[in-house]
Image 1 (cartoon, rainbow over the protein chains, first blue to last red):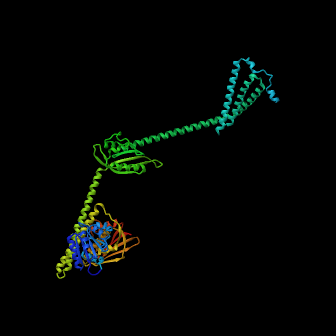
Image 2 (cartoon, rainbow over the protein chains, first blue to last red):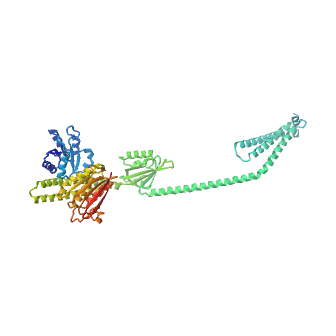
Image 3 (cartoon, each protein chain N blue to C red):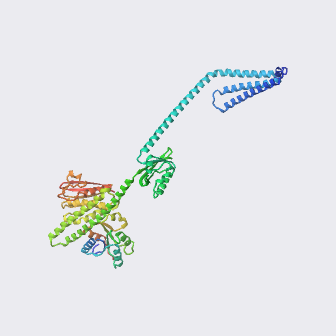
Length: 126
Length: 499
């Protein structure tokens, strides 16, 4: 897609989360960042417009990426939001089927890779 | 009638007169003649029945002739009784004449049979001796067999008694009727304690139910039994044993006996448990290490990249940031190699095969390497099919391509690097080609080994693990990897994966 994307970043590591926000902001996207699955659920419930893409970490406290993904993809309004998983764990590979994400990427990822992910997977709500 | 009148001519004096009608003499004559006559009849009846019943007895006609002779002899004795009171001596003498004829004929007829009977007797004798010899031979054979069985039984006991294992054998119905000495020594029991299902007394209450259920299932189905469970030692402590029971089958396939051994695996189990815990700990460590090492690398990478992009008016600063990025990438490669090799080192490589698109993987790898390629002035190209799906482990195949592309950028000296994904008859092929320094023919064989590199470590850093990891992953997929290279002209790595 071209033009700014409405991205929800779900990542517990402060530095990575801020770096993702930096990159996405740099490329002109609108970013909302939360630190775990539970916060993401709260944010989605209150959001006026749905994001065009969710960048999801897996290993997080309170609610991990697997649980969040299971809740999100069975929810009427949220199920159609594209989800790209970014994980530092090999578990993301073995449990890939269970996630049914649009794509799974292994950390670390560079600036250009993050830019391409958004360009390729973002589907902004009309 | 005239002949009959003549035969019973009443003119002769009855024989009784000769005895002066003395009753003792008369009745002695009557009774003796009667017994003799009846005996003769009985003997001939027996002979007749014998020839009737026993088909194929030799000289059956001789028996009949002999029978006829005896019958006629018998009849003369009955006539002797009649002539005591009536002088029918012509009838008497006629019957005697007939008897004489029958006797003489039989005697004459028997005479030439004599040699034949003799030879037949000899034949019988020979046959008897032959069968006696055969019987003796059979007896000797079964005796030898018995001795052999005894020896093999003895040998079996010897072997079983000298086994380091506890051993026993059971009847087809599972009743154990023999334990070796080791069993009694270990369990501290006596043969009386072990009668029937007494073995249950040395089992752990927590396991006995499962053991008994499986053992009964084996007895019913004839399937070999194998199970690990603890057995109580003489001192009351429990040790773990691996128990194996095999059925001994007869020629018809029926289970004749069961032979069981209990092998002490107590230490092995402890080591196995420790090893399992060690592997779990290692995996946990690797998982944490992977996360903890990758997180700062990613953050630093993004921040440095963004800084590099932002610095447009201070070339010396931009160069410093660029150098930092290059070193960070180097650190990243080292971390990934170390994590991979640590994982492979102890239990080899386990791969989970699912359908993966090699072109998608190649594209992702080239995307990730774009920044680094730009810094070294390398152009990255992707060629070949639009999609090529194989059964494989996506993240591991990503590692293969990442390592090969890293090498190509590193040794390519800024020349273009081309990744080509294509389908051949029975395999998928990935080639990674650069036009850099190349690899000498002598070095090509060893570059896939651990800690090997084609050039000296002074010029190009790293652990020398990249190609080793590539080879291990490709082999685990059932594929192959090779290299063609010419110094100063470039290198092509070729990976083949089964379709």
